[in-house]
Length: 131
Image 1: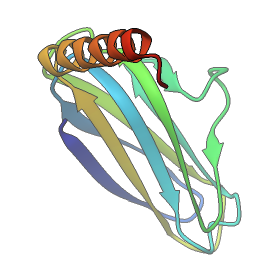
Image 2: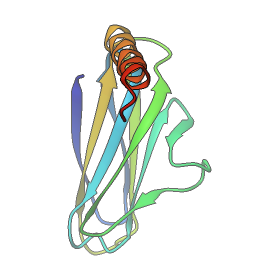
Image 3: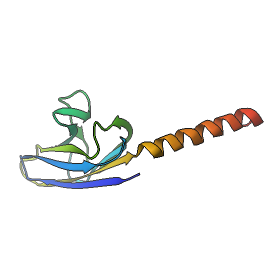
């Protein structure tokens, strides 16, 4: 499962859009790390074209301060390789800020083998009566 990392520094009071090219079948995990000092003034959107992958609704932004916001995702890539846009908006008019975005993808073959392994485990649990 490939891990893609993008560190984006945005100037005070500015907005920046950068792209990361990912490969695979689907995005399975995303995390955004906001270092201390962001104070909820830096927002991030993960996009494909003009459409938000995260967050929803479309006009919202992921914000944080001294924390990592991460979640499991299942967003099927429309093509591979696929260009994902990361939009960062800095509402802090004094300081520049850097956010750290991590995206994990999975290949279709990996996804299928995981599903087969889970199905076998469920079958064995039912067969032998343990959880």
